[in-house]
Length: 180
Image 1 (cartoon, rainbow, N blue to C red):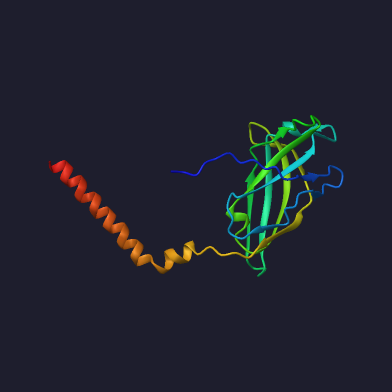
Image 2: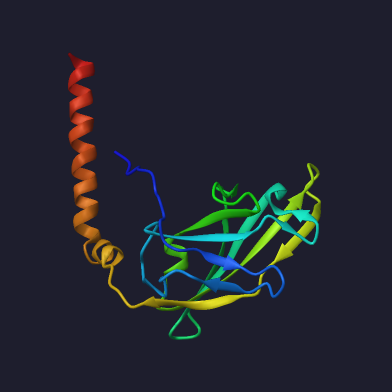
């Protein structure tokens, strides 16, 4: 059974300034936990029209991120494809969107840095418009524990035995059904 339920973020938003292109954190989100996966959502707002361009017509919005570990050689970067850009119900001159933070962004304790980029991409995959923000670097990824991988590695023989026992039981079961 998969885990599925709607996610609603009632926190104050990160606001993008269209002139300076800085991201301002109006929320109280300053720290997230290492190894968290899909348990935090950052919501953003930006003016709908920037320099005459209606940002709600952008057909791709991406969050480019890099998780930098406290040991600087530990880094993990990625891109999140935003899927919920909409004109604000409260203000038709503002658009909102969010980023659901995955485990790729929280792999290392240290910091999470990100920038947002809006695109208009043609049917022929040609970038016709691109607009981006400055890098935001005010999120700390706090140290945590998740021993899931260590348990699997330490008990690989036991897990392999369980797997083989399960295969054998199902094999015997299906052979008995087919034989009868």
